[in-house]
Image 1 (cartoon, rainbow, N blue to C red):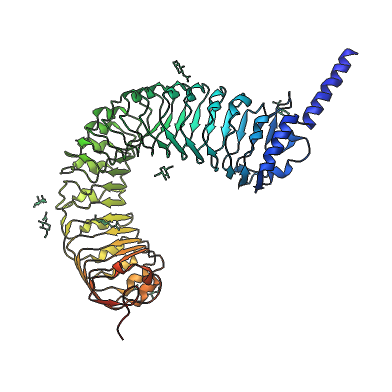
Image 2 (image 1 turned 45 degrees about the horizontal axis):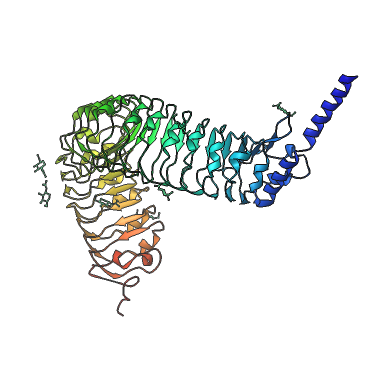
Length: 557
Ligand SMILES: *[C@@H]1O[C@H](CO)[C@@H](O)[C@H](O)[C@H]1NC(C)=O
Ligand SMILES: *[C@@H]1O[C@H](CO)[C@@H](O)[C@H](O)[C@H]1NC(C)=O
Ligand SMILES: *[C@@H]1O[C@H](CO)[C@@H](O)[C@H](O)[C@H]1NC(C)=O
Ligand SMILES: *[C@@H]1O[C@H](CO)[C@@H](O)[C@H](O)[C@H]1NC(C)=O
Ligand SMILES: *[C@@H]1O[C@H](CO)[C@@H](O)[C@H](O)[C@H]1NC(C)=O
Ligand SMILES: *[C@@H]1O[C@H](CO)[C@@H](O)[C@H](O)[C@H]1NC(C)=O
Ligand SMILES: *[C@@H]1O[C@H](CO)[C@@H](O)[C@H](O)[C@H]1NC(C)=O
């Protein structure tokens, strides 16, 4: 008898739970819906009646009937398996704090959500594990109360308009694993307590306005896999304790104002990606770099590093990309560089590196991009092996004191060469006709040399050419009308040569041209009238023998 009543009671509660929603949940959700005046996904259209647990994007607890999840990401897969990008416009109602049992809120990537995080969130939603609001226009500061969310594991607020400093008690979020606040307007210091977040795996706060120093105990983030503090205004040194991040795979500290030396590393054996570029680091590249055995991509570019490139870099067998450009590095490239058999990209331009190049570089059979420009390397004749590296497709040898004609063995790269920069050398002779065989070429820079003769006709075979820079040579003759057949051209720089005659009418066919410089030649006659030629500034045509017409003065009748 008694059990029968209990049974009916139980069934009744279940039905009630399934059909009705807790009045607070209902009120919170209806207020949320009221705040949204556009929802391209149509999911809020299902929010009618009282069965909120059946509504799109809502999950309830089967036992208590309370709403535990709001899942309305802008990018989602609809019931018929189509991936959709949708948006919502409107304010996040502070009433969502009425949904007291919420464990997850996902309103990410909706583009148009505005408003703030309700200040009482930490006291009203104690069970919250996930708060994902990235990719909206939410503003305001992070409320202090957020630090009370002791179960919070994932906090994704990136790509919004949050500002102000981070709450001092952020270190109280003991369960936090993912903290991503990038691309907002946060300012102030990183709170010292942040390293109390011992479960943190990912900490990304790049593209903000943080100042002050990196906390000295940064190494206490024992479980940290990804650290991105790039593009802020952080000052001071890189703390030595960073070496203790044993599990880390990514460290980006680039584009800050960091000073001092690169610290000693010997423990970060899992580090794959390291960017320290665009800071004010000084001193040598430490020999301990050789311990970073998992390193795949590293950039130390645009600092004030001195001394030689350490030979220990040859231990980095996984390395695919290395940027050391824009420093004051000296000495020769170490022979051990030839052991980097996975290297795809090597940039050491704008340093004080001396020649000769180690012959072992010929072993870099996967190297695609080599930039040695503007060093103290003297390639008065370019070594044959260099131009025969089998994978080379981008060669930058500007300011390498190359003498004589354009090296003919470049033809051996004809099936792959995409970018060639031999500017600022002592090249003489004519531009060879075989240049037309480099059919993959996108960018050709032969500026600031002593080249003579005409632009060879085969250049019009370069159907992918986007950038042609031949300025500051002694090239002569007329501008070839056939050049207009290279319709892919975006930047054409022929200034400071000895070109004569008229600008061909067919130059009006350049539909993709964004930059043109024909100044300081001996050109004459009327500039062909029409786009894109009339849109370039006067400076594109100045200093010629007698050009007239728009954008210059009208031609005399
Ligand atoms: C709650 O009920 C739904 C519908 O009957 C069911 O699909 C789901 O697995 C249940 N969840 C739990 C946690 O019991
Ligand atoms: C951080 O940890 C230290 C030492 O364990 C403790 O004294 C401090 O109260 C903690 N701070 C916060 C905000 O959790
Ligand atoms: C750096 O951060 C600022 C502020 O968020 C942003 O406007 C800028 O685009 C960022 N720069 C880069 C290179 O990401
Ligand atoms: C480069 O080397 C060549 C051949 O050794 C030499 O003739 C030339 O003077 C050197 N150029 C410079 C700028 O040192
Ligand atoms: C390069 O050419 C310039 C100008 O003719 C000359 O002064 C310079 O000595 C040459 N450099 C070399 C390395 O030959
Ligand atoms: C070509 O090289 C010169 C000198 O190295 C450089 O100043 C110029 O910007 C380059 N041209 C293009 C189009 O990048
Ligand atoms: C330029 O293209 C036109 C049309 O495709 C063609 O008739 C002409 O021969 C080409 N000129 C040169 C010099 O390649």
